[in-house]
Image 1: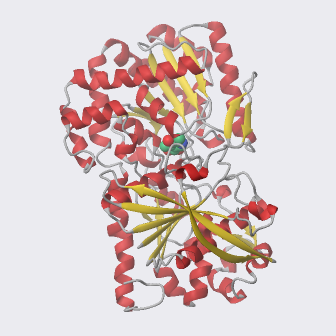
Image 2 (image 1 turned 90 degrees about the horizontal axis):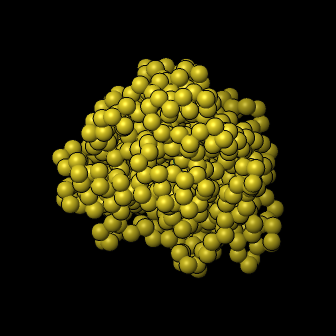
Image 3 (image 1 turned 120 degrees about the vertical axis):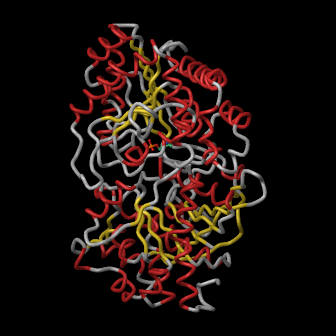
Length: 574
Ligand SMILES: *Cc1c(COP(=O)(O)O)cnc(C)c1O
């Protein structure tokens, strides 16, 4: 059994326990575990008030509030309670269970959402896991101890005996202290741990004061455990960096794309990483119209997404019909939520994702006069924006405001360029936006996009990408055949940053001299690219392929090691 640990998990569009890519990937991975019958269990945290509910004020500023939802409507409480010592207190933790059912309905994966919100705890303790990523400092430390150590102990209490612990992003790395406490042998611990690193931005790695960590865990494990799992020589003095903790104590460290492997090896100097490029769950992310289309022309695609290469043979008329129905749904949503009066016939671009500095969400609006000039020459342009900024991310909040401000400027100048901002981006809206536009725009600063997955979802629905050559797109892009790149194509080991002006000129240039002409004057060639987006991307960039690679390259290695140790008792279940 694999124990999959993750801080955020998006298992259902009505459960707001996620912020972005990491949580969505976890949900898609669990779905593929269920479909492919991989024995696994997931540990995550129950974010009682979600991440952030986004509204825009009259002047385009983001207003944050908690996301209320009804836990017991979607999850079963378990009666299991465990106690873990957290500093001076014993904290009681319970879990709610959610079941991910396979698409065929014949298999299940259990997901345990942990929470300290129980009657036994004082009011302050009960609130530790209220909101995802909002609290920092000691509260964040407590959350991550509950995830790592609480999760580890909860699995024991529930009688699971995982042979491998898969740490997804370092938030849950404290589980290593639990393993070390029970096994007391660094090499044995390492053989049980797989760590996937999901971001190449060291500023985003969790770091805590060593003193706080020792205080918090002083009654859980002996100081020796820390001395074993932590190596002072490699870290900032008196600081515990969870990414380093995970790296040093995992047999295998995994990056989420080939490019990300090289970027991460530069950060984690001295370590060799493997890589498994991320994917999406093809059935979850196909629009209702594309599901019907694929079922009609590509029998078996649900079980075997490899078959989607057959999308090339779908007749243009049927293919286009599915796209237009999706586009109508999107335009209806935009026109009912905003006053931007989009029309179905106009070329429509999406920029929808978390809003933060490196994603450069407003890059395309940097020169609004140029954008207007392109539309006047080549045809109307509509751009739909969506995404939440973290409520404490001043750069992100400024981007939200600037999108609003520039859209006001543009609407005062022309009707040929229209901008809409959809509030409160989530899975449901993502599904409608990414299947309903004509072009999926993605322009993070290279090389900071570890993989990216939203462009895979667009491709699956026949929407081509115009995207920076980084992360997954560097593996997938065939220029002018299944989409377009932004900026120069870097070598795998090239760690240089992309240049804003250069990328911007490339976006404007490709729109003006390439993409808009195809859309407005040569649509049959545009449809060819749309079909190639499906047939060349969907068969590979899905979580069935991703999970199969994890199983053969990482999980099975773990089982073989267990056999080699001839372990018959303890934590190993073989
Ligand atoms: C897929 C998805 C993401 C991740 O998007 P990236 O562009 O890969 O960062 C974030 N939010 C939602 C709602 C998604 O569906």
